[in-house]
Image (cartoon, rainbow, N blue to C red):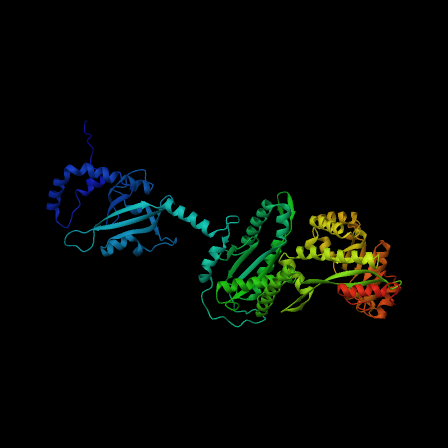
Length: 609
């Protein structure tokens, strides 16, 4: 085999003339002795993946290998050129620029001490930034303390940095929205909220607070996600994230921490009023229609606000308290914001206690129904009863439906409770119709969350199981529930009326000003709210409003029931307006099933005056 001759590499050739501590004469002798091995050294240096550059103190390149040219993006040799004509400036790993004395090369030239494996960024003349891991070794001539020459070896770590950046992005970012995720937020809490002495929590937000944590929960998202599908829901979440990002400032931290839950950390606000103004802006932009997948959707935002350090000394406490404030915003009507107060902690603790108690009550069948008589205004006979839910806890005592029904709705317990109420009411009234009052009807309140396709199926099952005729069942729904998702509600109510079930509007007059929905929906009767009846007949406004409601209902062929009748004067006034049915303590308080049975026995054939 013929041996191929190669010339020494640029590094090897230049190295032959480099002085060492042993002096020029000894260096030449050493080189002559090593000359047969230069081809081998050349191959090693030229095939190193690392770049190697030998340069003078002034930056003149006296030797380099091909990898150095490749890493520094140079098409022609660097030998004889000043290294600083190729790259400048130098960057730290955080992206900040190094001052000249901080540059690794300058530090080695100054101290004569080697530097190993230091990461720096080099900005090339074409604007590209190359990240390298470099080691710098000084070459010091005998009798001198500082080097005239240095050997720099380096590797391109750009691909590694990019891979690390992508991994960090995956670890810290929400894959759907691109916002920060919960893990990142939790990890950054100590930096965002350094330990401090909390200020006393008062009713009024402190004006010297500069950092705020906002807990945002979307209103109405679950309904859209369930009805339109998860792909549409995901598209909505991406659009929400975009709107939040556009509304916030560059240094604000925005994270998605749950399905439809977001957290924003605001810094640099001078007072709580500015934080409130920011929340109003968020609510406004989220309330604008979303045009997604050829459909238009509407959402709201309930926001809880915590101010640091007033409302908490650490991120965990602030998150918990902001969540409590957000929940209060939902209780108070949704699509609004609330600042945290110490009272909210007490409320939250009670809510948790009530929710757990309610779950146990469902499990142990300790809920009960009471029945309030509804009488004919013409002769005072009991023509119907309203089934009312009651809950008495062994430890908590009597809990009002006003308090526990919203909790049941939020905790997704209302479906199971509503089904039990409907079945139990149908059973009781079916029995009374068979034995005591053959024309007795029952009225049952519906939660807005019950009005769906499943309701139709379950009502039919209740009627089939109990043998109750559909005409004996009246379902009460509020104006707000009637108009929420009008198309689906209309379909559900229409199917119910086809079964003979009656639909009544509960608390009529307290909700929407437009009455056009009375023509669109299959409503059979109205229930005048007790707030109107309470001041009858003396209050002129209440009297006129009640008169107008009854006249309008009669003109539309609708029945009317007045709630909250407590005095003879109120009953007489309502009779004069030809209000068909009356309900209230004047005719009977809510009674247990046994007491209602006795009341029906006593009332049979005996009109109530």
